[in-house]
Length: 114
Image (cartoon, rainbow, N blue to C red):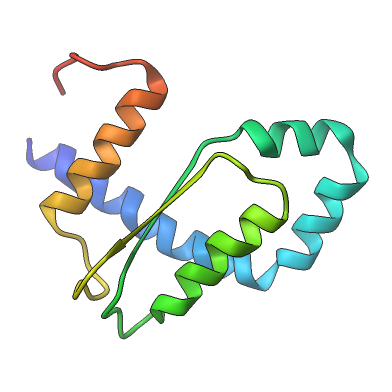
């Protein structure tokens, strides 16, 4: 079980990095999606889950909001953004449970035991 939570932790930290990268490369991403019908189709159907704590002192909360907005503007329509009141730059079991449930549902693994 410990390794499961460790992998979830890595998933969560990866999402923080992705949020920062999204803001830095938004124009490039949007132009790529706009130039290609196939890219636009894929972006519209790709499920994304972003989480951000409102008290994050490393990556400001508004970066998470901006990332969600940028991705949506770039054509990513299947986006879920979850904010966690009072959460800093760390994860908590409730957040990881929601991320696991979201991923499990997208992979069609409901009822499976991890």
